[in-house]
Length: 539
Image 1 (cartoon, rainbow, N blue to C red):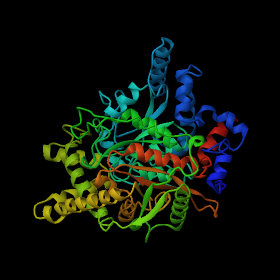
Image 2 (tube, helix red, strand yellow; image 1 turned 90 degrees about the vertical axis):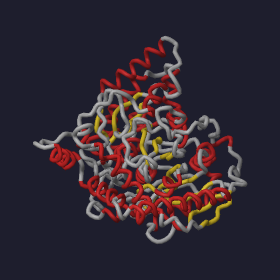
Image 3 (spheres, rainbow, N blue to C red; image 1 turned 120 degrees about the vertical axis):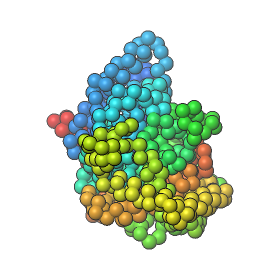
Image 4 (cartoon, rainbow, N blue to C red; image 1 turned 180 degrees about the vertical axis):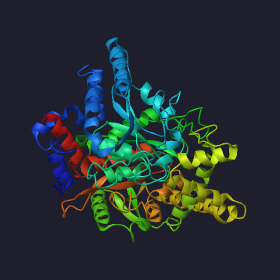
């Protein structure tokens, strides 16, 4: 793999903006093969809406790429070509009749397998839900369909969202399209890898402790964790109800903003969903030509001190340092800020998340939900159903959560964890009262090798240090590529930067991320899997 081209300055970026702003095919021959698989969401949508191409043609192109790359990546748990093409044909029919189909007209999108999809199997990556076909769409999915999107299929995930590598799926592991010897991250690894490999334009994920942002970092794409309550959780298979968020994963900030605009908003079916009005998150995203030489002048940003020390890979540190220099070049003032409770957030998160999971997953007993095990007594049926239907990582977390909630330990663990949560929220909100945004790596490492941490769950848990505090505080964050690690060795893997904003401040956060993305010069080459699959189709 060749190292990515990195421009030296914002000025040079403006001069060369017409050639390599985003990931581009290596040559014209490959460009012809890739076709529409390469363009941004708005270009695909406009082509369909203006009848330059049909939703059916666009969907067919993405299905071909999906199946071509799937043998190497295993991103999907359910794909029904006829199901997708019927959706596309309906959109074409409505357009032919002069209807306004919506802001995502014909856009092929994938959905994480813990979001209910009417008529398409939803398992949350668990054998315990094998064969479950919902009779309704999750609110976020219903809003995508109402906006004209085409749902291609359901993406793989760590079982019930419990994992950080997409190896804890009850069905199959997913592999990183940059290097299939490495994991894509988790638990939304299938969604992130599918977007990176151009198997879809965008995807939905869920984020309980970093499950959108960490795989976005590992796969070199953009992931948005919204403010808690900004997007409805109705139809989401619950892991930890006070932490779970639904959000987009996309190839660019603008694409993610377009999807978030559609799925955000109040929902009577979710009592925790905010009534605050939703902005058009794409409205303030200025093109490169409209930016001044110092577009971030008067912006004050803070680098979280506790997220940049021991345990962070040198390549990640170097990439983040380069991002900070560029933000300063754009006029931003960047300081360090200390959050004393930052490290304590990790154990507090696991106590709270696993306690809630213990309660939420008690419903999978073989009677009301899930796979039913064979037994001659009710008690034995419960045990058989849960033993055969739930994987080892899920069982481990249920046991830990049950222990934390048990008599004699509730005050010592769960109650104290909630107190730490209050401290984390207070410190982050105080910092955001002084600064426009906080920043830190989205993960302490780049994507690690498949199998490397399966036998060491504690090491995998520690990898969530950068992300869990945002879920405890309920704040929004955007993860976007800020460079590569391992360039000198010829094995470059993406590094993601996390920008953190005030509650319900997604619009300002996305503007900041978009300016960085447009001007940074972090020009990604295409993942090897995409190039190989596109070349194979051409040959």
